[in-house]
Amino acid sequence: MIAPLDWGLGHITRTIPIIRELLKRGHKVITCGDHVAEEIYQKEFPNINHIIIKGYEPYYSGNNNQRIAILKQVPKFIKKIIKEKKIIESISIKEKIDIIISDNRFGIRTNRTTNIYITHQLNIMGPLLIRKLINVINRILIRKFDYTWVPDYANSELSGDLSINKLESLKIGPLSRFENYKNDDSEIRYKYLAIISGPEPHRSLIEKEIINCFIETNYKCAIIVGKTTVEKKLIENISIFPHLETKEFLKLISRSELIICRSGYSSIMDLYFLQKKVLFIPTPGQTEQEYLAKYYKEEYSISFFKQGKINLKKADFNSIQKISNAKKKLLEVAFKKANL
Image 1 (tube, helix red, strand yellow):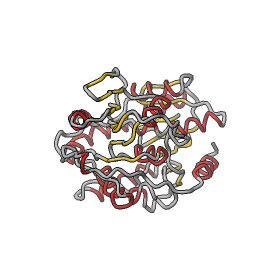
Image 2 (cartoon, rainbow, N blue to C red; image 1 turned 30 degrees about the vertical axis):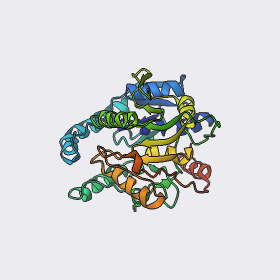
Image 3 (tube, rainbow, N blue to C red; image 1 turned 180 degrees about the horizontal axis):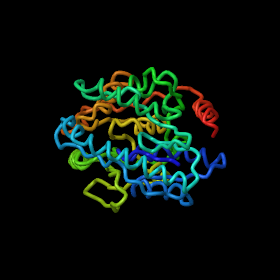
Image 4 (cartoon, helix red, strand yellow; image 1 turned 135 degrees about the vertical axis):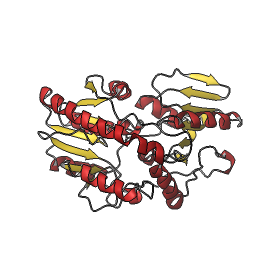
């Protein structure tokens, strides 16, 4: 069973290469998650059964300080973890599940299965006042799993300090549905492509800001709004697209010169393989994305702007330097240790 967190689409899409590899090895795969996860998985793997287990349904404050908003939701998150643990116990017996791979969902594990936890956050960059407590809790919950897989290379080159910790873990190389990407040499159609996803209200706030920025340019632009229910439409010089399946997404990437997106880790792994020039806009108050934006500014000279202060004229778009490493070998070692 594959179970991704519902905190942005990246947790769903980055499990796609894991599923491909499992199917290639002859395993029967079941996915679980909310209806958004179901739609994405069904487009990629129409023959796989999906079981609806609602996620944590996080929300953000409309301002830049997310600490209070997140703290208020802690009791809800704990209830969700306890509830999903009970649900998965029943499902694992009914479906005869042997192995569970959970992407950042603490409650998706059982005592009768081999439990694998995927995360790049062994060291959470939470608010300073509660960072130590958060990381103590994080370590306690992670240790309940049999294996911890970190989607990065051995030197933590992509995730930086986020994955540096004394917790026992296996580096499996970056995960992206685009890891076999090849530019189709299409003629560039769009100057800018913005990829927007994540919890509300900031998903809608950045969408409005990006639309205003794009309208002010004289270029053809495109936006992927990160919602599966939106129809394709045109607003002045901007083409608006819903969440796209892999082939259509790659086509749009190939036809776009410059990318604008959140500095979420799944997006970073995608861009590592896509090798497109990018500008980051971290979600306000989300400490992980703020850390990664600063890290990539220092390491790769990639510009980032705070939401509400985007200035395309002052942006330095750069790509993430690709390193030579045996990603496939790292994943094969992890699979072998878990008897996959």
